[in-house]
Length: 102
Length: 277
Image (cartoon, rainbow over all chains, first blue to last red; front, side, top):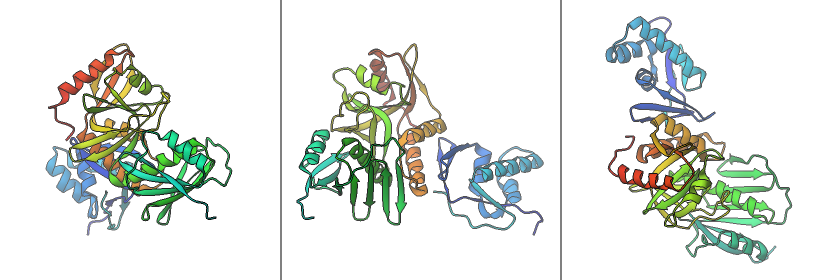
């Protein structure tokens, strides 16, 4: 098992919908609202609580988008920290149970 | 105890609700206030009014909270309980129309949220058999748009629009909830053709709105009082669905009658234009 694994899961307090190619996410606890770009959407959709972030970046981001792996990992960590701060994503160094977004 | 309860059925948005009271005067008051929306339909829901208490008129915020399977709604001037499973509720208030209006708005917002509809802070009107919605902050021009409407346009409301999903899209219904115009809308409905967010400017102009911005503005203008995450999530999903199915635009307008020519032209042009898919 790799060291320093980060697991991410979508909070049960959110609702999300894809619309015109954009992912809209709302935190119903405080009604904050976010629009995610393509890369952020890929990470958000893969946030099942069981797949390490590193794997998500490798398999979903680097595979689909023309990005430098190191930069992609750094950007993903920053994105995860931001959404975690807004209560959209849950972050842990252990696998999480994820309740699907509505 | 034992006083005979009398009721009037008020049907807004095709949802008949019986309002019952033992007070003849209150029955007359609500019958006058909702004239045009009184119905002989079998009520789906019932609200019982108890006018035996005295509350002070209040500008405080409404509180709507889930209490087990029921809802409590209160402000300084009323206290109400609503059991959605039984379809019944009780309201304690003075015999004033303002509290009554607020309770009805809250109740409809709860019922609509479960059915994929919503109340929107917007004027609405029917033109050429299509409903147009005009939303915006206070002073943006909702009432102005209704005042500028040509005689063949039917007013649904200048303040609170009533929206429900249907087979082909969304329908807008007239409401008795009036704004500055101080006039009830007509009790009729039509399929929604477009929602415009209003801004006043030197000329008439219609601009696209990105989906994210459309959802954001829509959520900001939906009337919803309940502190309940599940219903808020449902409303968000409804808002996204609405944006996917209804053209949403920014309407900058100069306040004279020519703006309605712009609306008619837009409707004619938009008939075959795909929406935010």
